[in-house]
Image (cartoon, rainbow, N blue to C red; front, side, top):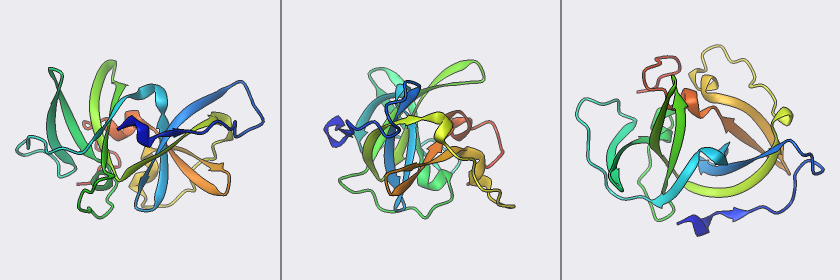
Length: 168
């Protein structure tokens, strides 16, 4: 599945040395990004084992080479209408440190988009919307060419014990 990712060879900000690479993906016609160093693998969607009494955005769990990996539907986590999974739907398996413990989780997204080199200081703060729980999950907004990419704070997105910004 990784062949869906095309590495963008252009440096977006004049070759600055403090750039990080971000894997971007699509959801609801918007492009989101995450630090590529958190990504362990990208897999096509396959059915998962349902976990009873879990939040509605937790699709279930999969066995990934002996590791039980919870699967989170990011559309549902962000309160975006669910869609039927198609051939481009992927699970991005990430490893993130949450409360001093390394966690492996899978994120269901509509499609993988690209890899960009972005200087983090170019990211702009999220506009202050009074009742926007999802702003809690956003690290910043950055312009890439003619489009805007939402950079996510994966630690906050995946901290299921934190009720801030919780949807579902």
